[in-house]
Length: 326
Image (cartoon, rainbow, N blue to C red; front, side, top):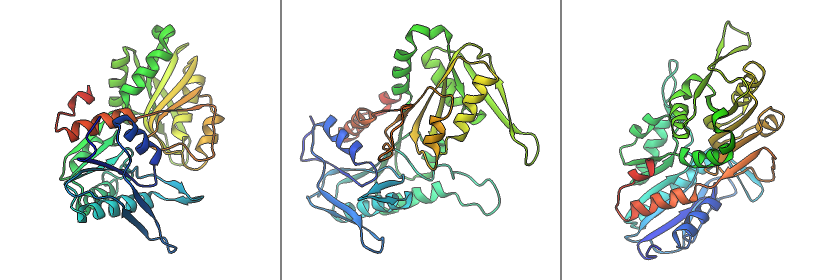
């Protein structure tokens, strides 16, 4: 149990349950605060306990969410976090760590065409300017985003949680199971995952032969009669994941497909798409909370509270966080 005097944990509205679970793991109460919006949509934050000299952690995923029956956007989540950090800084907090289980705008990490923004860098600047002293996050879309910050960044890996789950799930058929990367860009992540599971690796290579033509799927590796684990860092619309699964079953002859991804963004009709797909199960971490009022027999969530609690404990005690990356 951590001493209650020196550490405070506050949460915005995007993922309050995760913040409560983290506090439960640490054996400390969640900080008392009020974070909301005025009638015109402007966000506000009020802290109802002293933070002077404290080591403060602000838990907020920059994802869309629902609050009081209203849909809120990624921008609402981001502004809530920035305003909370500013309030804590002005209240003389000793150190402020932005705990961002899901870091939004991470896909805009480079210029792909002229006059494109690099939004991930802009968001990094905003968090630093607001007054954060360090950032704790999980599975950034691109590792180089750590370099966008001028403050320390700890990027936790969700793979150990998936390794444990998949080891148990496929224990009886381990020799007939393999890991598959849904695209070429995810190969490095999938390779490391396959090595931890001691399983072979295959890759789904998708390409558009010409303009206005459908994508052609090529499977690099032998997945015939195999149990397949598809690994990705996030699922947004679900299209790429479901198309890759379809190719593995119809073209590759895979026996079944289980997918796992750290962040379940799940926008639009993604949940229905997953329900209608050939995927047996999709496993997410709760860096983004489950959609309110939406249930799916194919979707499962694993809690990251223990991992974040351990990281927060290491940061607070000024001990190395590196053991968490093994």
